[in-house]
Image (cartoon, rainbow, N blue to C red; front, top):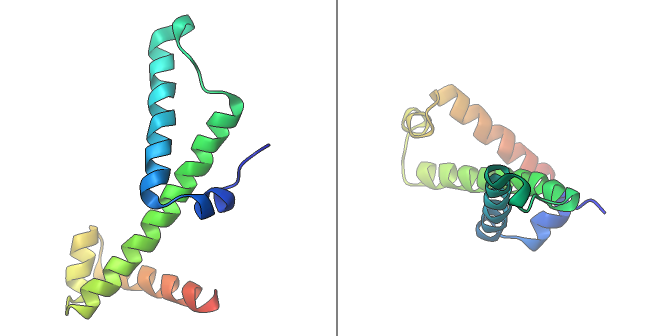
Length: 106
């Protein structure tokens, strides 16, 4: 049975998804180093780790956009927000507006 990111997203916070992802990633890395003595991930665990990576990406994205909103509410300019995100003011503004439109549709 494959676990989807949608299923896992309902079960995890960003913190718990990250913790579980890190547990699986560490075990996978240790198994690679240990060779035949390691305990590689099962297929289900490898798929869970993949789905968790999507959950972490989604949840971090939600947090990022709410922080952009908080920065705007605090008076930050789009130039300042773009700099904080390592992008241009135009890219920051466009990403935020795409996210806001998606939220309005949902």
